[in-house]
Image (cartoon, rainbow, N blue to C red; front, side):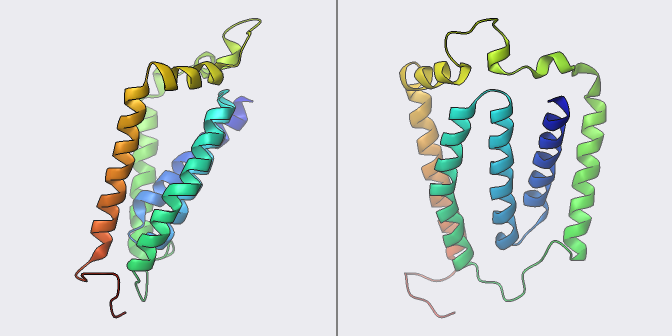
Length: 173
């Protein structure tokens, strides 16, 4: 199980580097979908299967529409692909930075801290993520509303950034 978690964490870092290193929204949106999928697999490995399912459905249902809309508005005739020289340079620099940070922080991590939510008790009555869902809707309702407001603000910022110089729904392409 530890090897699978190492592999999922490595894929998560590679997906985040794919998002950060690519200036084109076509490939960055694809990397973001991969990062969200691998992040949900990571949450599932730690015992949060319900939370990862909800996160994946909300992301693919809502934010992917925003990225499809922004990609449609930012129509580049020749987008920068993952094989081009500037993107490869950014990718290598970000991977070197990630490896350097992992070497700096290597001493404080142990495999015992990788336990899931269900491994902390001997005979749990409920799953760890179900308790978190109940707390999310009761005690942390303000944080839930703040998260929804942050997502709405992100939607407005992305749409404003991709609008360009055109004013209105119809424009010449």
